[in-house]
Length: 122
Image (cartoon, rainbow, N blue to C red; front, side, top):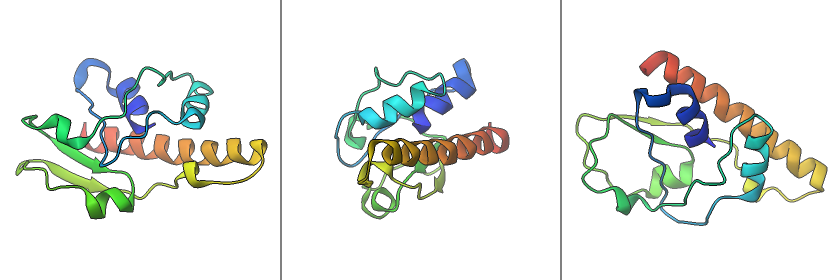
């Protein structure tokens, strides 16, 4: 979701990469909640961080404590490293309505963080 917001917010002014330490594919709930805010992330891929060796990083943002604690070291001495543990709606169990609300909560939190990041750093 952060990748989708950052792409929309920065346009051609930055290249946004998204990766994790595990690949699961795009969560259908994440795609559905982003669509409600006008952003299509269904074409995004689930990449492993090891696929991006050799990239020059300006910023490295980890979005959950699990990734922050387990991500392999990325050699990027000049990169600004930021961490925020977002609420993870993929682990929510409940009714369809409550699940949609959980994804909306995460979307709102991620959108606000991305707006703040762009304002402060870009």
